Length: 359
Image (cartoon, rainbow, N blue to C red; front, side, top):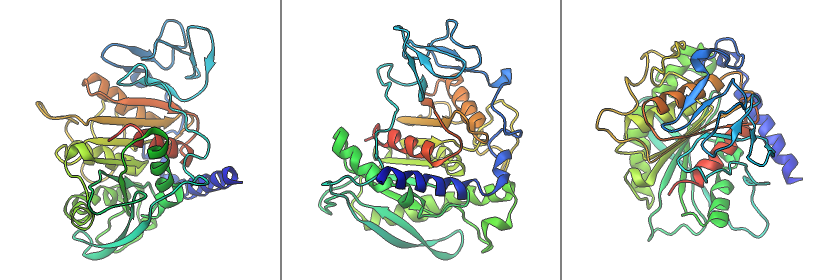
């Protein structure tokens, strides 16, 4: 029954996330088809090359397994493995990216923390806005906790990650992997100073209103959380993650503010943060958000994770483009495919794999 509820939840999130068909042109793939161009075919790490269109004739992923044309792996014993497929990871032994059963549900006998709804003043919109704070079980003000900020995609709100099961996901990771407790924060990324709704805008103008969240995140939300909760501060203790348009913003904010964020997860992110050389269409009103991800002499994130669905018609190409750019610029990152489209199943998998590898 719990698994059926999860599937219903995923279907619900997928429905409203895809309700605006403009997303089709927003992720660097104007046709909606899978990437087949030679410009986007090769994703190369500093020591390994994987051509996602060539099949299994000699190509290796970072685990030493060959990659076939369906993006599943065949190990040295000849056993075929389904998704997800690792193309690049920090650790060749870090090969498990499957999510366990009911990973984002409360388990019988388990203890879970509270979700607190807060209000903060938005200097961008000049209004009071809401956010959710997900506290770990046994939250103790005498202790301090790392924080992860969660960003939704198009048509979403600060409530999305409650529905996606972020709280049990984080707490189950503590139980199952003995990871540190953490605080999660979700807020509404759409930041419009004109008081309009998302449906009032075309995709480019809508993207600009998502890009506008930066001022609130840096100057309102983070200061509020640090002043009202017992947090650890600094890049070693602060992460950010998001899906779709929220994935674009998570990548931008982490690389634009390396003194604040040390970890970033981007789940099927929209393109345009940096010029990847792919010739993708630009959205928003700022061109590429950054001239380069890491300035000369600058610091890259302590961990960057990107996942895309193998059947995502919207953001598979932009995800691949980001990974290729990072490998070409020697930026360590994790990139893998998970079976699925532009959907909650992929985002949940990404959040699970991201949270269990940080702090």
